[in-house]
Length: 75
Figure (cartoon, helix red, strand yellow):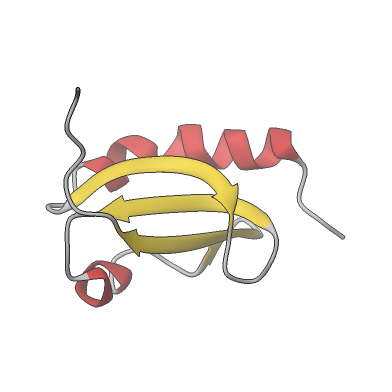
């Protein structure tokens, strides 16, 4: 059974601050994940494998993907 959007938002709210404090993490969002579900997307500057050691693949039944995006810059 898919996880509800409310649950995904709750998990994001609960963990976003601690994930953003990890060096190299540049964003936390909600979107389609590699397993086809909607989950959390952790955007990192580089070295996703190193950061993956600190962030689980699933947390509270919500899938968590890590994507190397580089830095975000405001236009």
